[in-house]
Image (cartoon, rainbow, N blue to C red; front, side, top):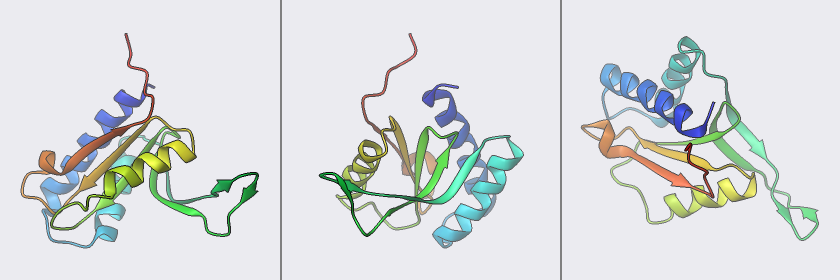
Length: 129
């Protein structure tokens, strides 16, 4: 399955979670609900995956921690805050580059309408032609 197909399924699941729970809860609550929704929809995912950070031939002592990695292709960075900080999108791009993935989604559940809280971040993504 291509990253774009996976992202459509992720967004559909997130919209369902937001429709039922609404804004204002903790990020961890949305993560639990979204993982259950992924399970119901047959999407494979890993929660809080630890990713080593390479630097000039060594592994640094602190690993990255991804909120969700879906179908081993799309990173999902969950948020539940008033607004994104200027570093959120560049941070996700760095994660994509470090683990050689092509698509990431930031999903901020602290919005009235979820489509206003979804952001795509791409790293050399090949579109289906």
